[in-house]
Length: 240
Image (tube, rainbow, N blue to C red):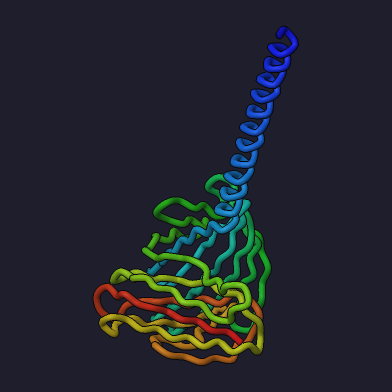
């Protein structure tokens, strides 16, 4: 009888130990899954900031993109003008670097007419403005996201809305020589797009249907806006 009680006690201890081990293992698996999900969400994060500047001598648009590990990319597209002497020129800056607090530590390539310049600068990014040390840009509304194709697919579709006066910007990496086909439809026929190449060149403007042979390898921007009021649209992009 005593042996039977001892056997039952041993079985109970083993059962409790097994349950605790299973619970701990399940908890670890859940934690690992949660950590993995959090990491994946973090890896997919992209924050976009759009800024503009307009004064007597400079008209400029700046876009700053913040990605994982505080990496910074973006560009500036500007026109310098002096109406008194009839002088006009434009430049395009490509930005790469890191974000440290509010500071953007940037490596910059500036292309102005036939000249290319390399430089390093520190800019300050605030919620409402961008300070380059020479000019202060004011933030303007925009929504920035990536277009990603499903595995094995050559096209993707986005359904969204754009508010009057704002822009929705879609980033897409592609290669020189590929063909990009874009179509946008909207409930009130009031949504259009333009495509900007990696070097800042606008390949088309205010289109609803386009087919392009891409001139360079790099990041393309598809910029959607409304022609009147708010616009609800469906955007389809195909690359082959």
